[in-house]
Picture 1 (cartoon, rainbow, N blue to C red):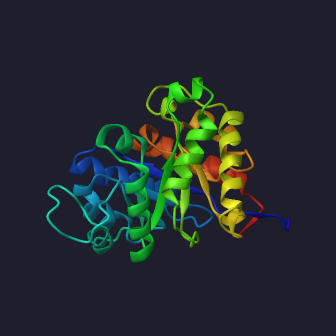
Picture 2 (cartoon, one colour):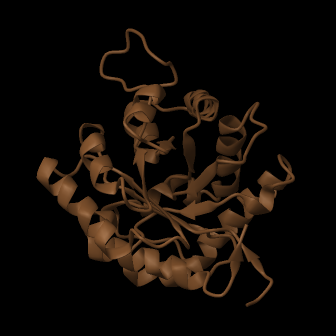
Length: 261
């Protein structure tokens, strides 16, 4: 056993607007049967809101946590169509995705609303997965560092407690497009984020940074060996239990023989 320390991998499946009731329960069971009873990585499933209870019942005796894809920063009120953090907690959610690129691009999410949601999550004990990433035009204009840095500053303005926070770097141009960031491109941004964390907290080396962007079984292994990539936020590949399990196993191979923070 080596004395080297490693951040415990986290792999989250974002099902987006997919699955019906039967499919959601069946997929969750497939994940639990494949990987749900190991403790070397944290596994999270984020189904659509309407299946949270259904999926939660499947996960309750496993080591797979329940997560949400979004929520509102107010506890309650006249916000038709919204879901609050306390509602998520009441159905068993442990994690919540905040600021996903699709929320930013399609539904008006801003750095300011990401910051509000992050603070609410920390206040009520939800574990936030905060998403950052640049568009294709921004990357081609060599603005990746500027964009990601600005998103980081906006999201974490006034935040001092990073203990339960996970960050996900998701290049927008690599989400659902079949394009991929190379391991080197991904690591470059992850390294930048780690440096920014160093300026915010002494615990910078314990905070997990995930990669999200067309993650598949075929590329998970070469991505996960990068020094600052601590797991994945998985979209389409999380809709097949066998593919999701393969991605989890890639993350687990990184930590064989290494003890965790």
